[in-house]
Image (cartoon, rainbow, N blue to C red; front, side, top):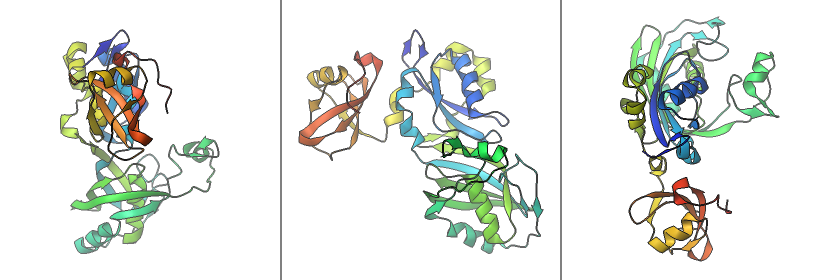
Length: 306
């Protein structure tokens, strides 16, 4: 973990509790690790719990690589009850009898696996005509929302206790599990809403390795900082280039270097000969590698390429 005057550089895997927004969770974590600069890599709803990777210092430059990654959740749906928000943040407005078999449930869950289009809920942060959807919802307005392509990689029943159905879901970025729960309830013919949601994985990170606020507070700042993963873990999915000393010098100062191979447009994680992470580049024509985002340790001004 690197450290600068504004605080440490790295990634904290937080087990977010219920009842707190991702923004508030970030503010609290910044205090616990002594950081002035931080961000999150995709929000969790206030009622949801689980894995919330937070980035500090130089790691904020590479957060988008995790925002775009696959997510996994354990979700509990209460069948037979519907709410406007699709979760516990609003009152039940409709109740229906529940009479479904395990086979019916499994068949319906299988129906939703694959690539599909989903309409984001009104109570979400998606922008439409310059405003977030939840702003319209709070004003009592409903607006037309464009559907978005998502992928449900897997969706499996875990338990069925009374009318509470617990499922495990792995999905692409941009998937609203609240909406998925409503769609499952509609297809079962009884309606449903989420009563619990716990994120269990983000990209290659697992909830088992996350720390709670209680643990961070008990450990103190020094040990909390020691938990931070290095910024380069955010780009593990990218192809890696071990630069020569000359190439690293060019790249670190915001200049191109030549390295043949790969496809034009491919993004690359660039490392110095000793293994130091320098930043992310992109392949261009004629073997050129353009700097995109640089670690401050590379000693460069912001690159001119984008």
